[in-house]
Image 1 (tube, rainbow, N blue to C red):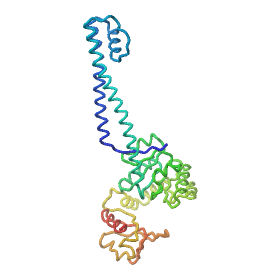
Image 2: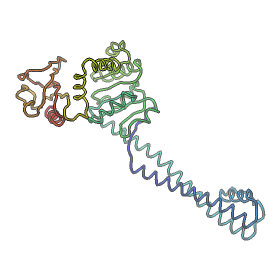
Image 3: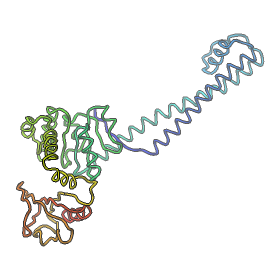
Image 4: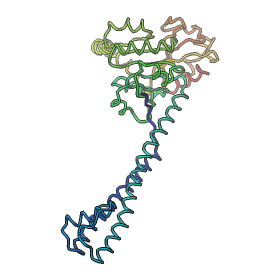
Length: 347
């Protein structure tokens, strides 16, 4: 079964709180009528507490049982008042209770349909399979960028803990129908970071079978799984343990280099960032040399590398290096200037 969430329905939450308060008031009135009826029979008829309580309950519920003891005229009048007031309070409590249940179900149905429509409208988005520790970090980085994405998580308990506002599907990413519901036909890329290498292989096979041209990045827990994942159709395989070990070693051996890389890759360091931009065919940067584009003079940006369409990476390109459509520029510069360059590249 596929379930879709989340949607922040502010008005629905307000209505639920109002309905909950009304139900609390109705239940309070019901308790008050019950206690008042019991006390009334004790005072008017002189009955014991148990008999008085029993008479009050059968009067409120209108079950039709006979009287516990013969009633006096005052007792009969009091019973009429208990029945009239009690039935009204019981009906009120049942009405508010039913309303809360029905509104909750309706809200879930409407929220799910609205979310399905939002996912169906997505284009050039990313699919994140797995919302463990890595999936959570990736989704939050995408939110900062921001980049459109959909999370696919099969564990219902983890699914409940997904950040509010994130488009998410509860289902197994190894199934075609789940990835199709996540909009794989229009996706730009897929990230598979579930805990099992075997599951990552199956997800990669499924995604590559549906979209052979899709860019797929996969997490590998074991270095030996990298070749299998690449054969399954992964575009890139990342081994967190290998990267983490290398990072720790570099932090000891090359601390200044690690500090610089950390500075230019974290979004909170807005004074200096490293970014990748794709040169569109219509971009005014296409067909000109790096010097002619004025990236250094106008924007204070440094072109660290140029990646051609054939995956050839040229580091520290000369000022006369020609930029062509389809090239990817690795640029170092100030955050706001990089955003301007990205807009020029995509024009």
